[in-house]
Image: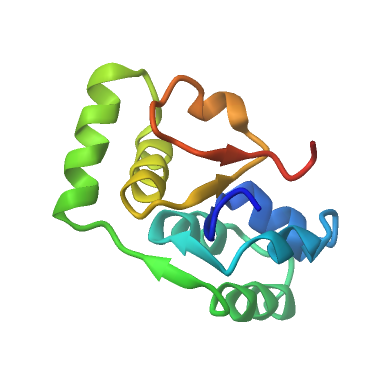
Length: 124
């Protein structure tokens, strides 16, 4: 087991919802969570129909959601001062670090060189 709890990146949610990734990855963790950023990224997509959108909404509701608070915001500031990274990725990284979560993402390179960030690529 990599860690007790995990934070799912947006790309992992998409792979899971399309059944391109087996949910066995969840067996390694006690809880799976998402950031409010992931929630907004996923639900901001233009779905092909209302049933797909409803499925994704219901799927996301199964995860604990972390919101951006002052501590996460301060972590984001430090990450962005030290590494060139997109704001949403910095928020996700800060959320994972401050809550001792393993970040599950296929886009490992987006989070490279962020100290204290535990990352797992579910495709490796």
